[in-house]
Length: 444
Image (cartoon, rainbow, N blue to C red; front, side, top):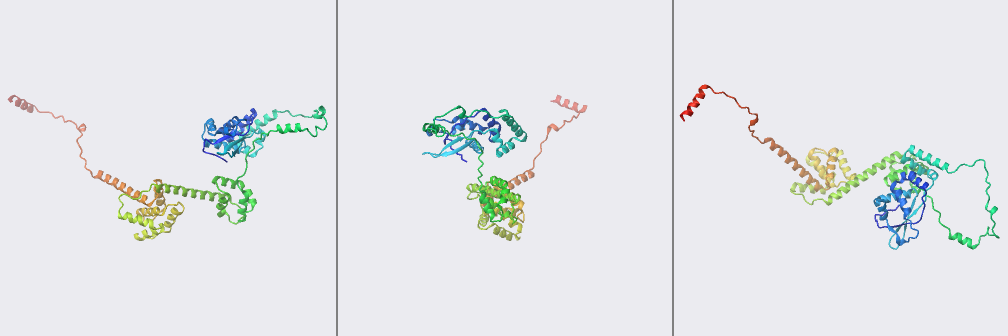
């Protein structure tokens, strides 16, 4: 299987085939559900790209195919691989002075009866289109094939043969002349091959059988479980030796392969491996961004970082617990062991995590440790220095928030008068009061 990311990689088509209407119908109805519309378009484009008079120097870059199909190189090669798998195209790499040239050999679309007589193709079509549509297609093509020729019943062949009609001089019929032999050689043309699925099995079953023979697993057991083994190898992209090595813990001297246990074991190992790989990737990326020093680093911080870098997690936990007057519980060692061996966290980071956990509680609990570890990893923290800086910053933010809330609670706020809620008082004046007011005005 070949693919390239170079759009200028040269290619040419090696042969010509002709698509008749019945071939196109088979191509669209039976092959397109298997390989997709882009693959069918690629196949037809290659048919039209054949140039009987072209030479190697006329080869074009595959970007021309990409432009015609209006798709990415990745999608184009994905479609090409599907065409190769069902046998419609063969791809070769021809050595050239400057580079390898891709050569496409096209194969003729087979008849419908040959398609349905190929179990792998028929089964894949059934899976793609569903049973009802599959049966409809089968019945339609079968009916069409029967209509092409009417059966001849109760009849015998009375046709004349060649020698009943023609005569050749001398022994020409037995030993043709040189001219006839040369003409036959001159007009000899390669037959157009019909597409057949490329069913080469890439798995070395003999190697697997030999490896299992050491553990007294008979070859017949491998044959019986062949499809399940193939599925696991392809799903997890394992080599034959890797598959056997993964399954050894599942062999219990019964001369049988417990595929359920094997499947669960491989899945668990795969999950653990990829989890560790992802964490290691995050840690490596975090180290690139790590800050050499922490702003505001005091003597206690320096001492803590020094101890975190000099001690293993078990030693660090023991010393910290001894200083606090406690003991190390068995579960605590298990937790820090898992963080280091299974997930690959560096020791200095685990030590700061232990210190952080013990500031909240007297023991390192699984729930708290994994929650803090997840929080740090999601924040890109991968070293003890970064972890300590993060913890200090978080504590400072919490303290700042608490002080702000305390200030708001203690602050005294004077309330003003809301005159909109104040009602005017309607107080009347006596006659004597009015007389006094007017009297005062006259005197002025």
